[in-house]
Image (cartoon, rainbow, N blue to C red; front, side):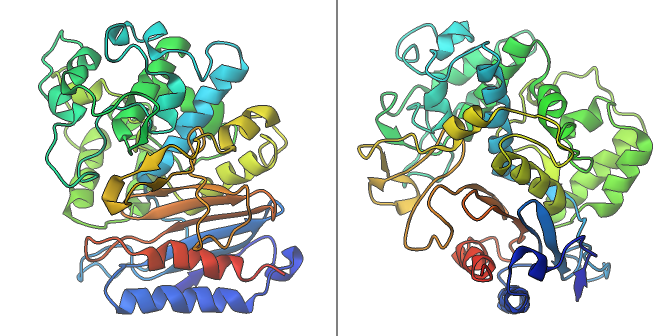
Length: 403
């Protein structure tokens, strides 16, 4: 099943070979037939003009659920959230509140002790803080900060507790993917802006960009989302596995069923979900990407963030001595900007200067300023694996249509 939303522009309007969209659809269908992905949907734009918005497959992994996948489907975008977090920080940077190379201890006094006092905001943004990375990055057992956060009792300091995990390296010595670092960045946003980080991101990014189908789970539990909007989200939510079914059930409880007891203490309610909590659709993600390559201006001309802030955020930051040993990378140089990924390998068919972020599960958001091209796509895994074909290969097909 292929469903194409009506787009305001055609591929010809943006000098794109329409036949490559057929090839892209065929590519995703091959991956579905192999049992690697459950479905696929994508939004493509060039020069600020959407010319493709397509969905392939069903809305749920369950055989009994026959709903056709729609292009406006909503799902958690996992680590794509990190680019929103970095953009929010750069909004604070350009407004003069903080600096990228400022020590974290200046904002989070919990870090004002060895060996954590040398960590800067830039270290957290580039995954070079030396804090223990996500589980599975290294082929040996280690205790992540999350473990100690989970043990936090009411009245205790979760930031302080997280530091019990220690550090695996000195700051600025090695690239190691640390989602918890972006939770700490969310806490920095909260303390500097004096509002919850998710609320700040909504105020300075989601709402100005017109991202009306993007939400944080915190907003539902806190009662910040109207019931009619929540019902719309529930109807559009992609169901990839049993965990998604449970989330849909919780969402129903927050809004349409027995009221949730919001007084019971859960430490996870305190943590900003700035490392991977955003829910969105590919069209909304594309709006965000278009803003970034349009020098910080949303589709309606509203200023979101300055051009120079975007330039600094998306320019490669790490130096050749920063090596990557995660997931068997083997100690290769890892190019990385202050939030976005900026790798340049033989697999990259997009232009030099492009930036992107992948999200687990999987999804991707890719911006090519040179070609003024933005691609956002969802490819939920069917087998629990990771397949480059759904991400790197797919981007090659997407970019092959540029004339």
